[in-house]
Figure 1 (cartoon, one colour):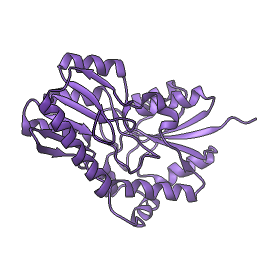
Figure 2 (cartoon, one colour):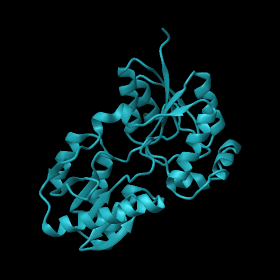
Figure 3 (cartoon, rainbow, N blue to C red):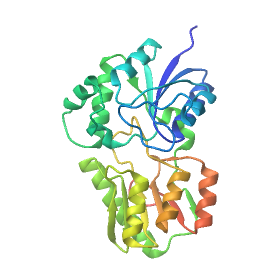
Length: 288
């Protein structure tokens, strides 16, 4: 029986490496298309180097790594089809600003032009639908990463104060409404009932730091997924997120249970304790 080959579009961060290891543990061959190198956001027209640490780590995890520019959509699809990939996972950080880049190819521009609505996940859904037409199914991340999903009741660090509890509930309501109704703003920074920052194209870590600059020490960060895009990608927190929390001198990091990946859990727990912050999971009704 031939070995199944799956594809992973690998953005920045540790999630793609974890995904490769999980796929290899199932006995699958993995073609990883690395579109982001280490230390800088991917450029639409520039592929990472084959000896970039990201591609090296993917290869060490057991993947065949092919670095490509994220804007080379037709070339990426061709490589996947040539390798016999019919199931694809998209993992890692990809800046939303790539959709405005002049470096994307004609095929990608055609997909973007065919979007039927606005919002962050409209872009994702457009590419998912195009890949389906080409015979490639984008699979849910949680199929490979279920061990990393934050469970209800998860907590680390110190307990919440009454004011922090109120800010978590308020921030969760704001973040979920934005994520669910307008498909934007998955991260919200709050302090004393005032919204300081809402995530835009800069991403989670930059939003946390911006909220810290505006509110000073003691801010409350709430990160959600919402109802859009659950089938394909989940937000992740790890040591990079904790570094942003430390820079912002935030007091609380609250994430959505069942819809968030926790990377490096032991290191994150230790960092929460060292920083003296509360790290908590919030359920869909806003409780814990």
